[in-house]
Amino acid sequence: MIRAAIIISVALGGMMIGAAQAQQKLVSKLDGWKVQLDQPTNRYGHGIMGNVPEWGRMCLSGPNGQKACVVLPQNKVFEEMSPRLADVDLDGTPDVILVESDNRLGAALAIYLLRDDQLFCVATPKIGRANRWLAPIGVADMDGDGAVELAYIDRPHLAKTLRVWRFENDRLSEVVNLKGLTNHRIGQEFISGGLRDCGQGAEMITSDAAWQNIMATQLRNDRLQTRSIARFSKTKDFDAVLACKN
Image 1 (cartoon, helix red, strand yellow):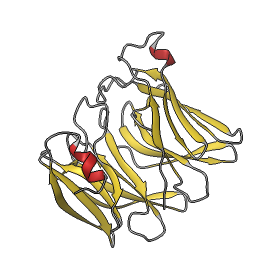
Image 2 (cartoon, helix red, strand yellow; image 1 turned 30 degrees about the horizontal axis):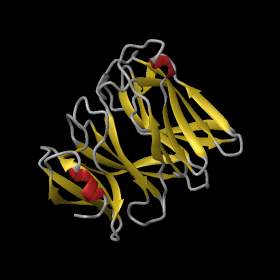
Image 3 (cartoon, one colour; image 1 turned 180 degrees about the vertical axis):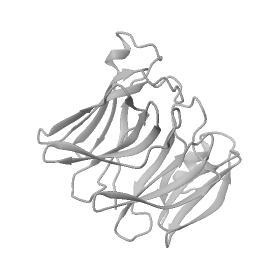
């Protein structure tokens, strides 16, 4: 089973970059490993995440003193609210999964893997236009084939398309996509839904495109099967679904 990190501390503020905000950071931990985003910035200025800043640096540190950092160039930022830790390449070491955005080409889902004390990046193609974002759903072996899949909503306010990618041999390949699903509204400082397993395998939990129903989608034989499992009226409705109460 692919374990993912729990977000344990979030410090957020306004988009003005001053002395107080310069001290902000975003941290996730898993099995003694820690990923930290810092160097908050507004140089991209998309503002899709409300008051959550963009980030210029990411550092991964381990229980035995391991540490590696990536400082992005001025044309890129980590456009991220909750960096994820999960063992994507199944080598026993958590990898970092997060959204990386380019000021001309928009967002991509990036995986940073620690190899020989250096961070090695594998990423999906960028969306292709500035101010176009994606909202991650989760990381797991979603169909039980032994390979790890990653899922996100491509442009949750526009295209509203679920995309599933498979990681094998240090490469990502798109498996399948499905329109009509979303998990984020403009200005929200969180992503709704995520992954659950209620005994029938991994399910991707999102809203439908109109924010009327909570949807569960499964990957089966490289195809997506989706169904409505609850009505949506408020954000907390996702909690019961993720807890397998629906």
